[in-house]
Image (cartoon, rainbow, N blue to C red):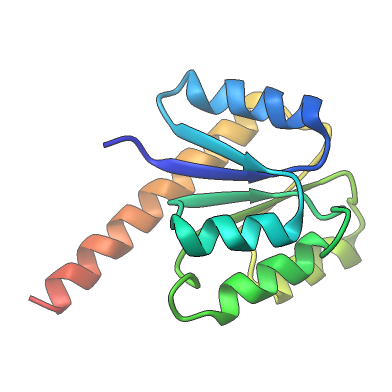
Length: 135
């Protein structure tokens, strides 16, 4: 079964580019253009990974990330913050709110895809371990 990836990005052209990159690798990709829409999508259909822009029109990506990681039902979902904001303060804040990876725009597609693959593999390994502990 293909892994589901939610892309939260208010720039339609970036959303389309990321969607194409991921769908050509076999991922099931869907998008949201606001933080509130993303939180609703996550509650309705738990994705396997979230790619989250910081600068969104309603809730910023830091707040969306914080809410996801505070929720016991969704805290395990890996989050990639993908942003043009590239100061060490931004990266540090991203880590503080729980992101698993911080990638700055513009990005190299190979670095982007490697990060996604690594996080999904890590999450799958974690899920298998959890399953073994509970059996």
